[in-house]
Image (cartoon, rainbow, N blue to C red; front, side):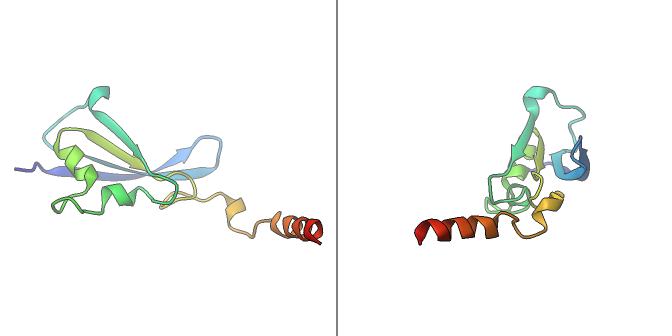
Length: 111
């Protein structure tokens, strides 16, 4: 029988960056404390936000994060800056500034 899982979400300041990162935590409600050996941090790959491991439920109606929490782990996921619910760097909001210059250089080298 699955235990009750507590879920918490945070937006945590990233030191010296002026950005907040999104973090989600899932753990069993019946366990009061977790040591380092029972604490996991899951970090997404290049194109998938934390939601992919914490919300999508392909394994018997539960996510991978739910399965780990039910097994007695204090499980954390985070979105790296620029992904999912974390802040994006301001430089990422505009067009790439080097694109036009790079395009001209490539065009000149081909002609």
